[in-house]
Image (cartoon, rainbow, N blue to C red; front, side, top):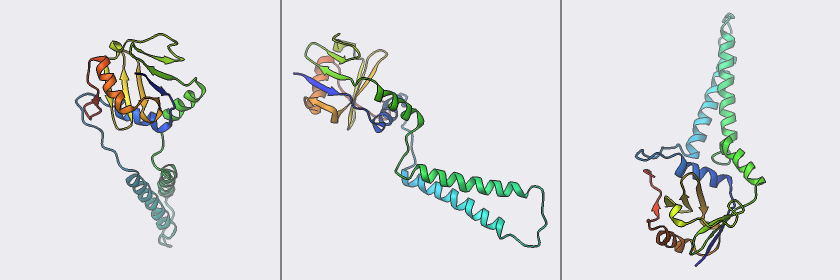
Length: 192
C-alpha cells in the first residue's frame, strides 16, 4: 500500500496549523475567539464612537472659549474613528492573516514543493530528505482533525492536508499509520 501527498500550502493551512497544534499547550483549554461578525461589530462601534465624538466637538456650544487641551479631544476622536475604519477594512473579507503567516507563505512559494511518500517500509519527503527512508518508529505523535494529519518527529513537524492526497485514501491513511507506528492516531483536542 502506498500513499502520496503533495504539499500545497495556503495561508489558511498555516493559520489552521498554528491554532490547532503549535499554539496549544497540554492541559490548557482552547482559546476562545471572537467571531468575524463580532470583530466587525467591535470595529463598527469604535468607528461610530469616534464619529460621534468628532460630531460633538464640531457642534459643541458656540459660546465656549478655547482651552489649550481641546486639541486632545479632537485627536482622540480622530484616532478612534481611524482605528475603527482600519479594522473594518482589514476584516472586510473575514479574518485577516497575521503578518507571520504572510511571510512564511511567501517564503514557501519560492521553495520546492514537497511530496510525501508513505510506503510499507517507511516514508520520505522529496526533495527535502531525498531518497532517505524515514522509519515509522521515528514518529512520536500522530494527530488528525477534519482536514489534516499532523506527524511529529523529534524536532520536525509535518502537517498533511487531506485534500492533497494524490494516491491513496485519507480514511485508510489513519489506519495505515496506526498499524505502522504502533500508536493510535489521536484526534486533535483542546488538550492536544
